[in-house]
Image 1 (tube, helix red, strand yellow):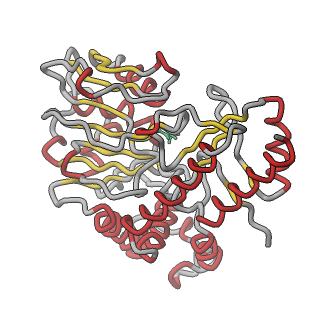
Image 2 (cartoon, rainbow, N blue to C red; image 1 turned 90 degrees about the horizontal axis):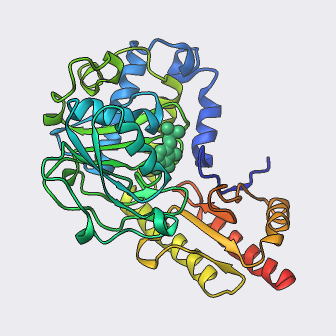
Length: 359
Ligand SMILES: *Cc1c(COP(=O)(O)O)cnc(C)c1O
């Protein structure tokens, strides 16, 4: 077997232990004589799995009891519609902080359902910084404030939680479970699974229960958080295989010491990669130092003519999916929970060697 060092932005690397468990489980899951994909979501084995996944993620993130944990389909993008549909009436205003492409997409989607006030926008510097919170022009009567704690494309991360007393809605797709968070500061947290949770196809949504009765009257059943909350996320057939893998990833994270332990590893991985970039004139990262992402590290080669060679030599050394997003160019290393410190060390060594031979 040969496994690569996978720096994909998403769908992203999964822990090898989880893949091996899946391989073991496939033909005969839990003594059912079937794979998990072939059993009823209402059978006792799957119901127990669903309960275990919720219990484990509640423990990992210390989610208070007055929050519901939901597992809809549709990814983060569907939540960009569900947030306004569940929290705003037509004509209400919602505040949006736009610090990257995902935040912009969320604001554009919300405009179909309510009035959007963009309180801050860092597009003027290609999404490489976070405008100072004191400069945000918040509306007095916002139904909620939406922001993106980690912008996956430009690699910009909030290392603070915005203040204020309207419900905070956070798209945590690429930062969830990478570090401890104080859930009680948020109204809603959502995350597509395919970065730090599991395979694409399932979404984690954490909602303060008191917000579950604010949906507009014409909200479709499957767009309503309350439908999921009232049915243990089984309002229709759920993505059972993705849910099963998410549960395995939660178990894996617990076995690694939980979110605090992985956060220490993540900080170390990011710090050494940025240090390697900053100590060289050959590589650079354009993001303001106070908001560099722990999860997505873009870097540019001073000579972009070398990009293709960097990527092909990297791939030949087992380092894959390093091509930067087309809107940024250069490279991007996504170093989520399942990307080991060994993988980051291998990348740093490769970068130094490439600079030595091409610099
Ligand atoms: C990947 C990503 C998305 C898109 O997620 P889907 O599950 O494909 O809808 C949205 N927001 C952020 C911050 C992301 O990283």
